[in-house]
Image (tube, rainbow over the protein chains, first blue to last red):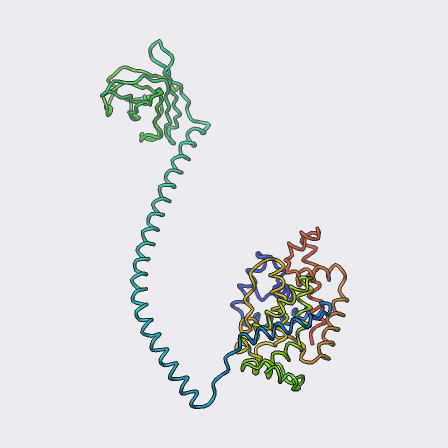
Length: 262
Length: 185
């Protein structure tokens, strides 16, 4: 807020008619401005006069009687006067204060330990929250990167089919030289123990580059998402071979799927 | 102490009566009740339009004065100012089914521009305020009454009346400007 509010703004604040978006900045200004606090008090007093515009009504006589009965049931403690009373009051006050001081000391010791324990608990909870937030951030980033590859208009879309006569096993590669590779496969045959499928990026120049190994699930489906690959490699083709478990630096086994990027 | 009601308290100042209430003088509280009960009850009834609820608020406010008179400082605010604002706030909270506001005397200091300690002064002030309200165009008066007696904000009044929000803001702004001009002593 620039400068002091207009008089009518303080009137409307005193009236309680402002919605939160208008009220809050005004209240913040008034909290820190003695002059506006004084003007707001004036506005409150002036607007309180609106009560006098209510049609004059009289309560029933019973209301006063009930009030008087109520206060007689809860009398106000009369103030003590005189030096003796003051002395009695002071002694009593001192005794109560001593008792309170002792109780406070005991309680503060206990409270201190509890606060340390609470502090440790809170630190642990905050660390766990940070960890969860970081994990979620990474997962979100990875999902966004996957979508980025899948939706990139200039990504190469390659359908890989069985190298043999059987067309059923199939793989699909979405590749962008800078954004990465997303590969899915289906209808793959289960492999004997000690064997694995390995995906290869076959560049336009040079040797095949391993894009990782994968084992299909019970339905024959498998996937490799954003494997670490050298950036900017132009792909000529993609292939899947059967290799010893853990994979090999260069393909050695039979080619099961093959697809050209051209 | 109720027996001392027969004494003439009508000329005593609010401050003097409050100090006696603080000391447990029921007659002083009864005098303050006689002085201001109609004003307090009228406000509560205007908001709630229901006698039992308005009387309950009237009793609660004077009972609070009985219990917390020691916190009331006449130098910081006038007693009728506190009574009227407390009545309005409590009645609106009840109307809107909210928790009662914290309207302790030491937290709600309202300095009225008029002295209302005598019946004559009250009648004069009521006449002046009512005449001021009559000077307002009906749509401004309606918006002002909805804000004051029903505790409604700009947007709530706009929703209730079906008028544009900007129109309601203009009406209320004009209304408070007029009141500031005519009610300043």
